[in-house]
View 1 (cartoon, each protein chain N blue to C red):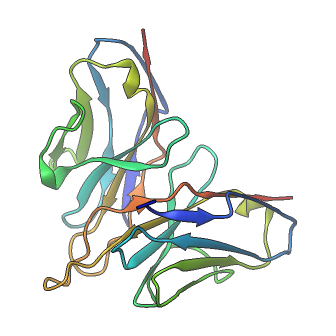
View 2 (view 1 turned 90 degrees about the horizontal axis):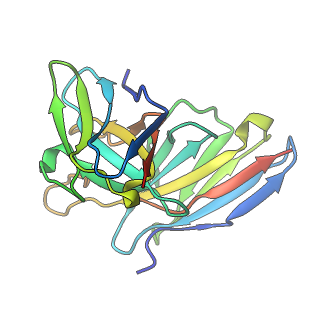
Length: 118
Length: 111
């Protein structure tokens, strides 16, 4: 199991452009969360997807949107890029324990996508 | 609002010395607390969580609800402990499983 995978590794865009980042969760996981990590900061929660729906959202504008596919993989889309969107974008996966309905409290992180906006 | 504070950005100790990485939190309710670690060129990974009450790689952390703290401790630091450490919390139950992270503490263990 390769664990959580993300693509691309690095990305350079210019202001005003749009970007799509991709994430494949760890095998057996059905929940994907996205985080933004600016330089010198801890990861900041963007949103979480489960059963192809956005379940929880952090304090990010509507320019940030996402999608989850039937195979549990996920995309993060950012429109109208700003210089301040330059950051490492992390994907984390977890799963719902069947029978209990509870989500595990351990999130497994991918290596991240480094986005630079010029 | 939930918040995690790690007051030390950098911490440097010598091999064999005790180490304590501080973490304070703010949360209305009973949170779950975690320590995540990121070694050089590796991804962020869970080190330990308070609910497990376990010791991982010699590290322990005790949740002090009175002081709203979750400090990470190790009695004898090793060079391989050098890494970035993040304290994080999430809500219990319901749908609040998002992790709120501190800004991290870079631990350097010198030979």
